Image (cartoon, rainbow, N blue to C red; front, side, top):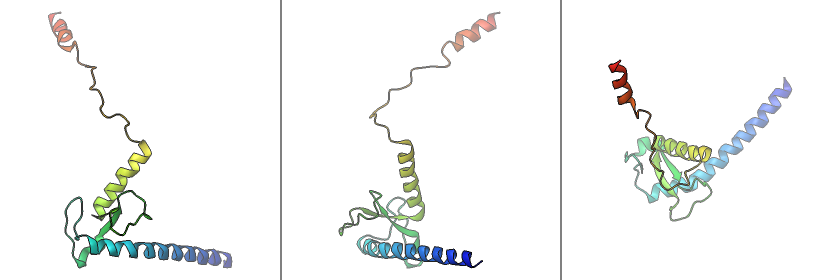
Length: 125
């Protein structure tokens, strides 16, 4: 039982270190972004106040959380819902890839070609 307690303590230390790292990283660019930009979601235009500001996130446009230019050019403020949607679009792009084609040709196959004639022929019999 002492062994489980030791590993739990180690896990707690790792989690604490990760939380501290995330808080330290976010405190810098989040505070700067909130000073630079109006508290409005860049996608759905929802407005925020101090009461619900925790629901407004800083999205990194290039998805690189270490790219934090002082002018904020890599940030946009998004509500948690739009932020999740943006990341799911990015994950789909990574998973399935993007289309290298600029424009796809329209499909030319018509599964109902000749249906009218076939029905007419069937009705004649």
